[in-house]
Length: 313
Length: 291
Image (tube, rainbow over all chains, first blue to last red; front, side):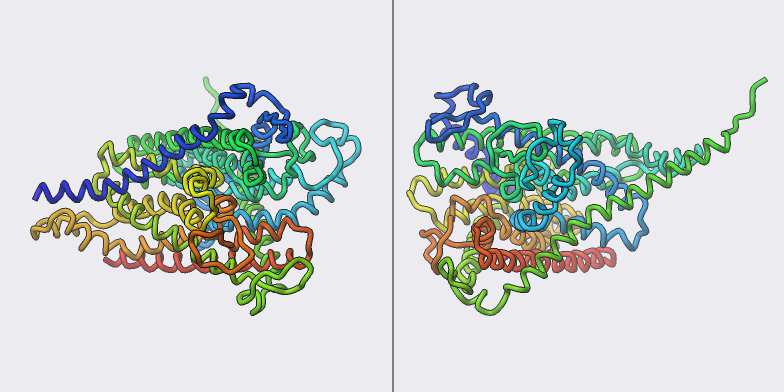
């Protein structure tokens, strides 16, 4: 009987091993394919801002800048909203409204990236262009709002990313809030706290997990490709301006990969993919670690009351 | 002599006002998030309806300048590529899901779980680069198979984690009952535990399919694109998403209209799958509540 169980374990474990092998193979293959570029440019690849495939000059600074800038602006927009949604659904809204709202916010995550991109090109970008054109001249002097009102650019990309990231951050925050022991809020109310003060106490208790939820959204934003490619303007120039067309790591791969004629060009693009892989791996691992440690603390403090573990999404 | 502890009426009012403002902010957040959802759905439906007609589903793309034509090849292509992905992902996903739930506490299970979560977080474009390296470059040929391979990799972690979660929900007593009757572990799992969780697992697979059918980035340089009708899996193939992308960034009005129609088809697929899944999980929850 034991032997048969061993066979079962090995059999199912084999599928698990395939899963593991795929992840390792991705890392290995990306390193192998980008070797030419790594050897030729070394670390200078990430400090140079000249991207000239014709001259064989490859510097990835504009892309890493565009990726980080767009993701951070997107998080600045989406985090308060995502937290507001999480609090509203888990603490404030009437029970009958909870399921429909959860469904609708999850639908936001289910809409394909390409559909957001299409909507971005034909609806969002013209709206952003009008907004940019209406910006008073005094503000346009600032480096943050300099440049002509094109519509396509950093602002459009950040807005679309924010919309796409909200469901991820808010659903994990909701799970995290759910795992806060009820005693935390009850104690606050017993001390005469207002609703806001009680919820603030719960949010403070859940802070680790909430940071994790926000980071999970960050990981999503970093790797988002199609919608950003379609609205960011695809211009490899480092700029602080929200109005300026820029470029991201994912977008340059999507646009130029099939055109990369020579080996070095392709290797440079794969190296960008490799770095994107490593960054998202780190961000996602850290975020899961935070969410997990939050779930564990909640379990330890309230062993009498079983709490649903935060979904390690 | 100490003063009696009493809040000034002003500070109480301030605190109450702050609290109301906070509640209002939270409610407003929900509205702010639902506005873009409403806008996206509104435009996809109104713009898409203008171009969706029978030829859209039955005809091939027309050359530039000629009005009309459809995405018949892309619809078939999406079905084929997604089907290939499912063929690859379902066994691996369910197999590793079973391992993670059956040997839940072990180090190997944690490692597999970590791998699944990692794979789930890998940007889709990076999956595409990887698939290009192992499934396109060696054969010097874009192909439907390479596209299915790329999408399959995205599907595995979703199925694995759903399977694991649902198997863990099956009451321990059912497993114990089977083992007490002398069943082996494999028998207990395959004849009792998995069937109990099967509706949920199928729901998870449907949701995973809906998600990958909407993926574009991994297909750009794996299955590529094809203006013609193709069912040869070793040849490049057209898919709805790549076709919508090509049309969206083109300068032609007629192609833009078709892009909206393609988007409408994609969103309909996603909506129907989500609603079905929601309906199924509801029934599942009710059954569990009763049982």
